[in-house]
Length: 163
Image (cartoon, rainbow, N blue to C red):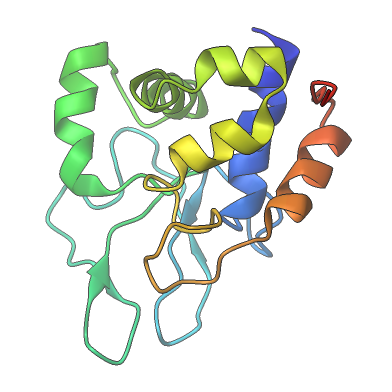
């Protein structure tokens, strides 16, 4: 896999708070969204999405909204069955989560930008997918683009020269 793609995917996990989650033992691939109660949670059964068996989403705000975000990229359950079928994924393992993330990057038309080092552009293209990206507008904490670019570089990503 292209090193810039690898660095960008790790940057997503950093931004979503899974990579450095206090309970993760699997680089964030085992993280369940933290609810309004503030209790961190991880999962150990990678056979399917943690919310696949009907578990209710976790309340994450005072309005009572719920989230099923899980895994390194905080994949919502409502999209999981379609991607599982489309990509022929057998489980919710880190490998399957990475394949799904790559599919999302393709759908956002961000792959070429990432490979070329146009990271600001790639982040902007993906902001509607990941709530922690700047400009996402989901009412959650968003990182500044400079913080994400610095993380991306720390993970081995190369940024294109700006002329």
